[in-house]
Length: 276
Image (cartoon, rainbow, N blue to C red; front, side):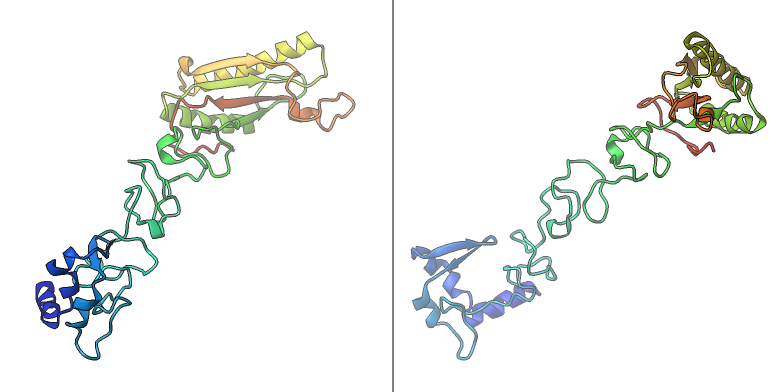
């Protein structure tokens, strides 16, 4: 059909101004892959009376989508007039991500990166780290994460009574669920960090915080977690979660705790991160 259209235009003389006879003239320009020759004398001799002409006096070739490429050559005939197109009238996709520039909100995406409908890198868990760089690609919604998408928040916080390293029934339930997640991810390393308030001496607080960490570690092992996955440390009262003042008894319980971390950059969770 396009060949027939071209033949019709040739019969009308519409392309004579861009023909071989016009190639000898000095005035010409390149536009979307086609030469338009500004030879008004040859055009005037071929214009059909009443037909529209351009500013050089040559017949106007139909361009329905207004992208600068005539319909007879346009392989993408419905391109928006504002879109940059190639010589075939198709939208340009500079970063070759499958989204044309006029729709691409992220026009400089690196090669091979998966993108969404707007041309921006995918971030499935919406943690701010794109899939290709995210080593923990199922982070819980709202988690604070590192530059590689792994949580920097504790996975669980286990509370203790004053001077005690014993686990309550409610805290055991938390550890039961946590153990399931750890066992489902044999590559994860778990750091168990014990803490204490300022009720005792510095030495006794360090000792108590380590006892709490050991108790949690032993319980997780009892639930089937491998010993090699678990590390422990006791910080005493040196890292309070709240104002660690002996005069403010309301705040002390927040500091009698064990925080459990999944070490960053070493795992990809396959089950829910939520433990409380």
